[in-house]
Length: 216
View 1 (cartoon, rainbow, N blue to C red):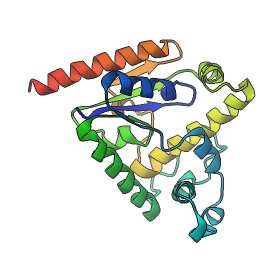
View 2 (view 1 turned 180 degrees about the vertical axis):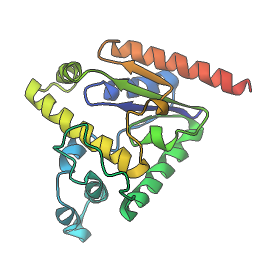
View 3 (view 1 turned 120 degrees about the horizontal axis):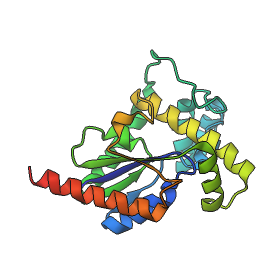
View 4 (view 1 turned 90 degrees about the vertical axis):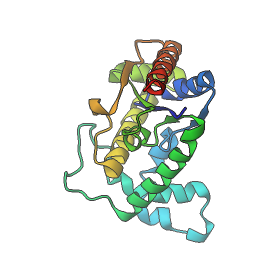
């Protein structure tokens, strides 16, 4: 019972839906590689990230791997795209390999994977349901104020940071845009559909897919 990947823009409720879905399906949850906090920290320079190598914590080492992936896009518009011929750097390829190993190790027992590039990484797995939660910017900002208990200005700033960082993360690792329709089996506007209903829809779709796969 491999599971579900969830791609969610900031404010789309991924942090609420994913753990609830994992509980509903009785599988483990692999949370985001790029959280709101990580996205903000991606603004640190590579030089700052690698300073004090011997004293770095696991989180700091993680930041040093992610920092080169930011590529200066933080603060740029969401329509900005990296150059088409931009190669995957060695550090990004190494990080991708490690991230995919963690995800694939979790699949046999079942997993809900939130973010982590899981949708792109597992896009050829026949029994992994790939889901996108999305919504208009203003609606996601409004929902984020409720989910994260922050004010409108903070939510708006975080949306720009987080969406840009995650989009570029997927591009640098997999050379696809995070919202490409072909990546997903199911897309839900989670600013319109209540989050608990999103959980029910995804769980129903996943169980139906499993039944179909097992019948082959």
